[in-house]
Length: 536
Image (tube, rainbow, N blue to C red; front, side, top):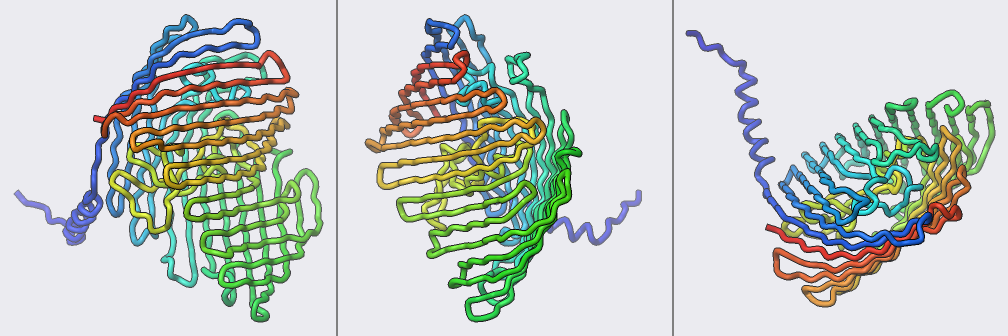
């Protein structure tokens, strides 16, 4: 019997694979099983009824979380199964699975990072059904949704004078029909499968206000839609700044943008401009440029305009960036600002994006990198690290967290949205204020919706084992096509008690109301419930 000889390269790869696998697996694995039991009592009054619909429900939710944390690999898998049993003739028992998986593999001082994510849950597809619908009393309004995605990020070392980065992303989303699928055209919904393939890149000098600065950046994205025409978008931008005097520079820029959907919605926009830039310190700058453009959307149009771009960063903890420019639809504005002290943090953003709606939350609603407890990546459970040098406690990990959209579908929208967040955190008190406004222009149907939101929340730790929490949330939604305006309010209050290191109990109450100019959509709900959680 002749034993075949393996190539020498195989013998070299074997120890390398063993070493790399040992490096990846040399981490901390935590398994956290638990169970949550909720007992609900509720009463609901619809517009078409003068009497309250009363009912009760018991929900048992076994859950398990796996957290693996090492120098190079962080993975979190969270599974929950919510079993709901009703004492209500109008609702039937149900079993719901919620899955959330996030994994990130990084190497070479984070210059290479591979991320994987997947999940399953239940989402609201149409805000005309009610922004506060949940699985207890509003399950018929929700759609089962699954997603999976991956991204590969490559970047140069941070100390390099010339910086480069490229990111490849692929994401797939499947959403089923709601349990109630009305024939009414305003609820024109269908099962959809979407896929997003995207590439972003940037290359240029690291410091803008020192010497010659240049940068070129771009994005290519293809949204594949099962029930509609695909959306393909591409844009590229280049900037060059040459120093003239000590704090002055001559700046030139060029930009191109294209969106392909269908004949009447296709557009192209290109511009070039030049002007002066005033540099302040090592980071801040203000520039004003004169630009000429060519726009092609149904008609070919030439014109000119003035643009402003500035970044002011008086301290390491505060900055504001403003861009006033032009795009295919007219004037455009981009704003991002932050202010952070030891106990107070504030964030301000405004942006304008043309996207498929189910992809907006991963871009517009990016809350940043937060510290999350093992087994949870929900925004309510995570917090902003107090400082850049914050050391993670056992069971904590860093996660890029996104706030869920209140509406989830495959429509192409031009969204103009602004958000302001303010948080005060000191000793045993946490208070927060969130203000937001979004204007959605549905490109394919000529719909135009406006959403305004105010949310105020507070947490007060009364003692080491007792905490009081409150929340007030107000929404105003304007639906232009239906000439309908809804004002929805949710008020929540609760108190929680830690029984021991493994279990806690909480008492909660909530009131939801929806007041519409079309009386048939009015709604009131009162709810109280007790929650007991045990971690094995």
